Length: 295
Image (cartoon, rainbow, N blue to C red):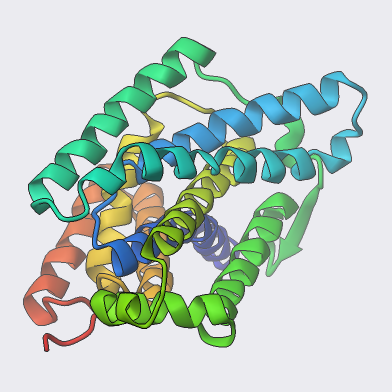
């Protein structure tokens, strides 16, 4: 009984760790640029495919399988630089337009990236093979947990702490917070918003692509894998509160654990259970658990 509960909990925390990375990217982009980035799920899928290719190249050229996590993470981070192209090439034209234009543009980006993935990697699922259990398994209260899951959970916690440090202890973090609070005032004080937007969007993209890369040893990459993730990421944002990094962390934990419980008890309830919680939060606290009150 205890072992089963631990297995469910650890499965949920592993999914939450991945979900947090994507939701954190979504939050930081919205917080500063006020854009609902529907393409966050596509960046997640792009990171997953790139991670598979990076690991395949690494092992095919004699790289030790025990170090596969290094090309996996580097591949995920490197493809996140596509955020620079997307921000400069597309998003900068719609910052002052109606939100509808922004949503349509990011949705078009979802479709374009899905086609790009199909053209590059084909339509069949791809994976990293048997590397998932390369680091062995750990025993926790009678449950058997893959060590890779523990590594990803620890990495996600470290990234959450790193984001907190970046926002609160660095000059760039103070510029991000000032720009999020009052863009016009930040510009009046000499802040180059083009510079800020490029870096913020690239940071958000890299968080999403890294999440996709880290999840891939535990599953297979599919071109449509980003769509389900978008739905869950927005549930995280609604539960935690739009623009709140702490909300992204708590929301990801809620969604991840609920999903794991539903899958183990009654899989048909997976999304229904999550959205019942979303509806309850919207009724009780419309701005989410950690959302800022209206001015």
